Length: 171
Image 1 (cartoon, rainbow, N blue to C red):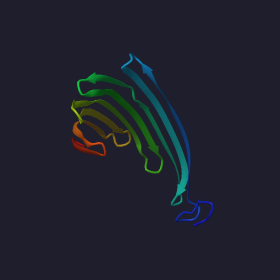
Image 2 (cartoon, rainbow, N blue to C red):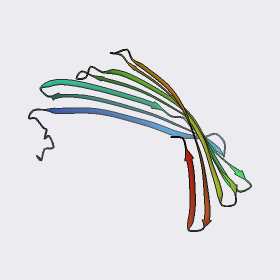
Image 3 (cartoon, one colour):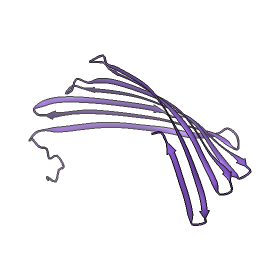
Image 4 (cartoon, rainbow, N blue to C red):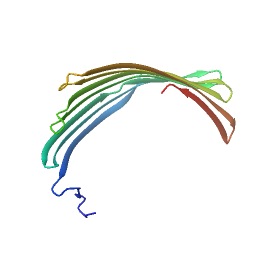
């Protein structure tokens, strides 16, 4: 292996990738028990190179927006935590080597509740619905899908040093 980390199977092959990433987010207290969290991220990766004697370019752009509301409240057996959220992601991929032009969009809505149901026994209940829209602009092929998954868990603090956890999940 060469020291310059540019070793390839065939001399002269290379890929140069230029990536820009941005991420911004924050939290806002709505009340003393509820807060709103927001995050936006952006990634743009542009590649060019030479593979098997053929010059190519690739471009990938991914944008994501993920707001959620989180709250906590007292129950007779302790503090409960609720989370409601939405995830949105848009991606575009283009390649001169494979002639790909693909766009993909996902939207997810989810909720989770972590709640003490008895002394030293905590239940976790959640659900997520995801929607995918994908389009290949070269072939015209489209793929749309919706999936809903649920989760149920129990956590039992048997002693100070031992906790047992069981979970059933659709994924």
